[in-house]
Length: 79
Image (cartoon, rainbow, N blue to C red; front, side):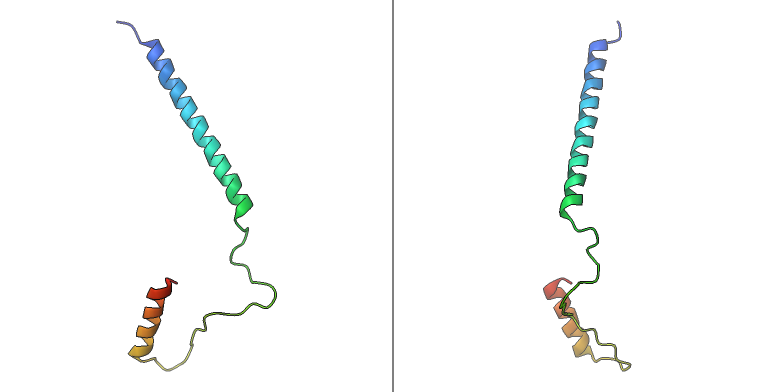
């Protein structure tokens, strides 16, 4: 019984095709992500930017109602 060279070559060809297609698709996705996504999404905005959320930094502790309201806001907005 000899070594099935045809099956080995088919497997190698399939593996080579799979790796080539994987690298090609990865390259395309990376190229599209570089073109479409901003380079620095967390940079300081220019122009007339308005701060949406005001964090309260007070020395006294807040009551439970304040914490519950902030927790409810977190659950509602997801931020």
